[in-house]
Image (cartoon, rainbow, N blue to C red):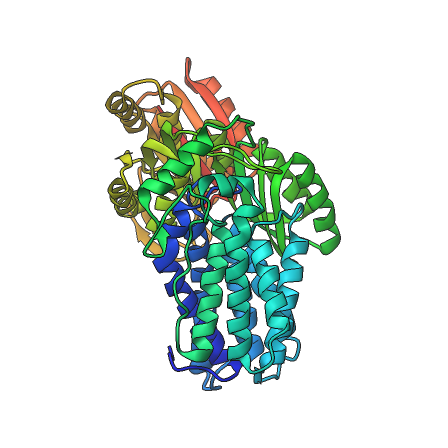
Length: 565
């Protein structure tokens, strides 16, 4: 990636900006996480912004690689900006990440207006920053001053008065944002008590600093994160640890007012009119509502008490996917209106990887923080570390629920331990083993005893799945063809068939031949409606004293998951 200053904003400048912004957020991530007290004091704003921009970088690099592979030279400005905005949209995390995605989309709408434009000048950048601020504010159901929206508006206003090239405009936007950031504690009491500036706004200033460096070759000086309130001291541009901790303790002494229990995020394919109705419904369900996107693809973020209702609203509006539901631990706090206090961390939490939206809801209702493993897109260790942080507990039980994720989960657990969190990894190889472990989880027990009990329950649960073969291959049960129905027991192909129900029954019979007291069935969206009824009937007829429980897993990859314990 070129690191020389860029005179105009073109595709190469967009690429450079992306890379510099990612590097800046990487350096500032922990600092931003540490000052995150609004709208939820869950210490992940820096991580969310980093992951959002990381997705944007991946999309932009893919565009450049595609043009290089086809010998068509570099992409246009429109190509690069659309890719940056789209990448941020599909990878947006948390409240601030979702707003940043809309800011980038707003810029893209201006800069990609003419798909043949090679570059734009200072005037084009001014217009893009103004539209970005306006579109982001419109995407937030109930805008609050003293947040990233205020910082974005100040950046756009300052850029609007600047005369000159892109470097001059970028510098003005950065200076305006930096000034507005310093004033945020005077606009939000929760920031003033904590003695910090807004975390999302701090992240945006880092992104704008990267824009300045793109055009000038020089990075602006560091940005203080502490407010001049007497509650925090600035040490080397960051909040001194003891000052930050003391400030948060002051917040904890304030009166408690509670807040929604879950954060729900999903991508949504839907028409504009359906999204208008969705906004109204979600606004009535909770707070921190941000819906960004357009042209049929949206990113939805909301904090609610009823996670299932938030997902159902998305189903009514269109097709939600990549659904992430996070249960805020007792240590997390929401803020509506003025402020709410930071509470102590929970003593213990469970973090689980789940393969479908239905199971995500089930695990969440049981109190777990979930990470959705989309078919073909296993979560990275960074996502698991983020989930552990968001669980906001001193002790965490981690359930990977996939044999292939064991090393990834182990890396995440090790990283979390370096941050002072006690993490126990239970090597669950299937979501049904995770269900068994969660069923015996008792937060009041000693940590070691709880982990042993959960591990024993998971280990006593045999698991299987029914899938459709994607290609011809050799298996332990013989050669299968694409389209065959496969029954896998403990990860190995045991049955090859042509009918889903018949194959599932054969698998179940083989599992129950070794005994069992409870059968768990998790149906994927593409499984026949009759398969659960037929299997339940089979258990009643052939296996006395064996109970059956059925769950809907959603888009989980496998047609059916089976557990026997």
